[in-house]
Image (cartoon, rainbow, N blue to C red):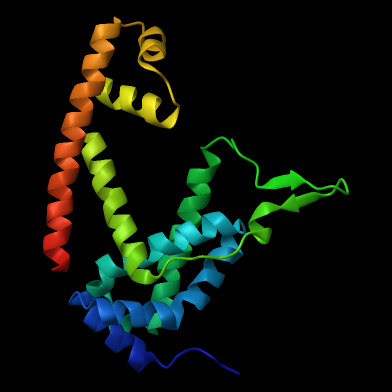
Length: 205
């Protein structure tokens, strides 16, 4: 028995999403998130990664809803293609990244336990997904506006926990130079993020 939602409601929601209707976006999320999550999981079985891919999928839908045309077929098929493409991209990205943290942990009985399977689900709603993605995009943009030295220093300091002295040793630069890169990088980053926050606030007002 076909359980797909009828095309008219989804097509109407997509039309409203294309106009920036956040209520329609939330309704579209509720109507399709389960199906699209299933599409992603069939390609990328890692649940944590699949949840991130689902977030990326709905951000993509928000941005490209205006490109949907009824001649392209059932709206759910169009949405599923977006989810499938994002899932495939996630596998390609994963193939180039080293595994640093295992999702498995040995139990008292000697058997490995899936930590993700034991954790409670607190998946964010569609509007929170959109806001998170917007902020992450702003951060990536602002980091990209820094000089290479500033970007390297901030990444090592805040993601790897390097001290100023360790940065200077790692980069083989004078301590004063490294401190200056960090200070100026933080100032530039803060200004850029403040501007981005102002733009985001204006869009949601």
